[in-house]
Image 1: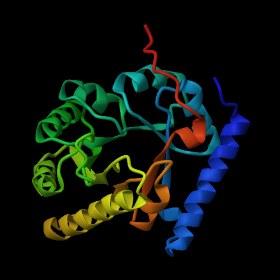
Image 2 (image 1 turned 90 degrees about the vertical axis):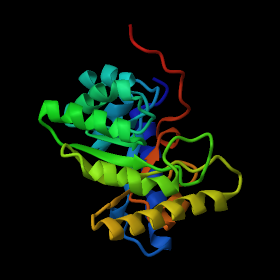
Image 3 (image 1 turned 120 degrees about the vertical axis):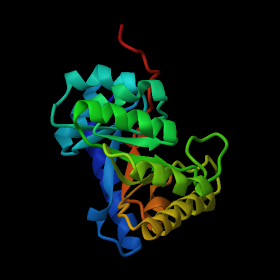
Image 4 (image 1 turned 30 degrees about the horizontal axis):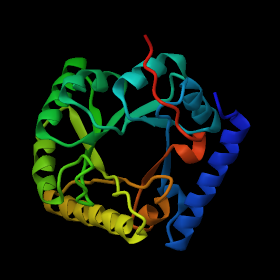
Length: 237
């Protein structure tokens, strides 16, 4: 462990203040934006710190990493998958995660729906959209998103709660801002055309959460600003 709880608590206070300030600047209540603590490559202590602070959910990038950690932490904590998910791990993801944010294909939708149905549960999902047209990022292109939503709405065991995106890496803050604006506009258009509520916009991380909040983010995903630099992931054996 490289971070004490006192250090984490101070970091979390700063991030919460940052969220509140960003919301105030655009006339939004701070309660509209939730913080998802990303515990990627940190030990179970990171998730325990988040729970102790009062956060009710954490985000992980790898299915197996979460599977290793979940039995070691507060069972009331909810886990969200934010990293790329291969369809052959859909059952494992549906078993262990409260929500999967990184759904980017019809094949993955079908696998998750089948797994959730066999477990007798409804699985919450977000559709991942490459709203910045970044070849280095996963997610469907903006033009392909309506077809993916249509496919998702036909599956009985999935609950589509909104959209997720990751902005391209860039020194130009306008690029992130435009990416987030693209996702919000897409959400508004699809909610109207399909007649469904898509309340969640998961967008914004440590370096660009202000721009994301200005464009309507309802959840920011923060890791390094809370827990410090990430160590390499070492799978348990």
